[in-house]
Length: 194
Image 1 (cartoon, helix red, strand yellow):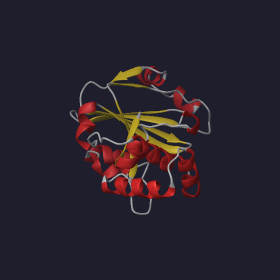
Image 2 (cartoon, rainbow, N blue to C red):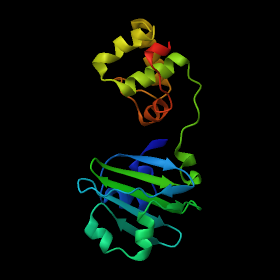
Image 3 (tube, rainbow, N blue to C red):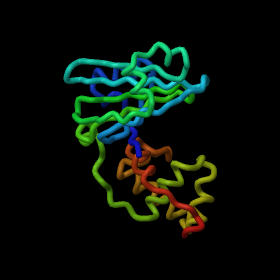
């Protein structure tokens, strides 16, 4: 499971590497102690992996996706490209995985790097969790109908939205904040399970 954080909250060297290719305000961060290099051999998507060692000020980039790139790789880069697991042993190791289609970047880091950026666990009611899930999953015109399937009436829905705004999980316009997106990803509901 990944977490969404503001790009501006990343360390300066990591932020610069991300923004050189992917200039967006938010980025996906996957927390863990190892990273498995994926393989992407078709020409419509190119996956590049950049390993940043902030302690030693080293950067290594492996470009993938095209056969010509693979032919020109060193032996170590080929090994890295073939689904090898790379340990993330210290908080100084950051791994950036760039994809060209769909254009995205995922940042992989040690749990100690991101712990201070993550919000504390919030005690949410089941209906609050459902409203977060509905808001994340559906367009605004379909949310009220889906809430009714979960037996949440219009008045209760508005009350829950107000509670989520107070908790900082939802904006006044009804969209999710970054903290709300991260909390909503933890929940998955289906109306037939009610």
